Length: 229
Image 1 (spheres, rainbow, N blue to C red):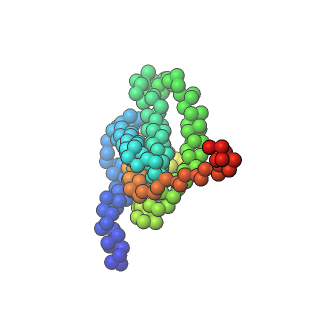
Image 2 (tube, rainbow, N blue to C red):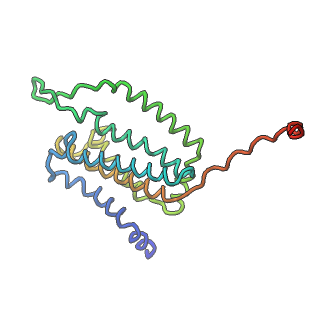
Image 3 (tube, rainbow, N blue to C red):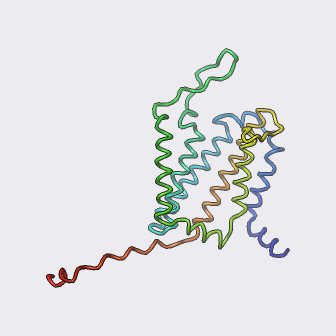
């Protein structure tokens, strides 16, 4: 019991994040419905957190390269940008809504010229991420981090928030007992906490330094070449 108390005292921010996740459901009934709209305050905060994760990853990469910790940071950087682009609807969030249909519903903005290229580019990027993860063995950095500090609370918050967002959207036969506007507020709140948890998880993992893989041995030089020299 004493060890559990000490463990909790050493991670107050993580416990506070878990408490905030639990409080999202009741709070969603009191916060302004406008907070749950596209490009609202909660979504704007999400993009800010995602860009902060990108900046942190790039700073670690510049400072620690060529260590495997730096390569993990370089691996994570484009993931943050992909998530930020998704939250911004790949630029459509910055465009004004053109009008309303006959039923009074807002019409979505017209797609931008580059949007057909987004998913093929994302597929290529994911392929590169898979290759680089294998080539640089960056999984070792994650393994060392979980052995030494085990940020399970942050992972729990991220997974719990992802499950809450899925329920708020009505996927996988999961529904919340909330009206549509309140469900959107809840969804944006838990997504914000998920991104904060992921940013904290990245910060914890990247504090563990793992050196670069040893250089491959050069093939032996032919003895006759040596004699000629």
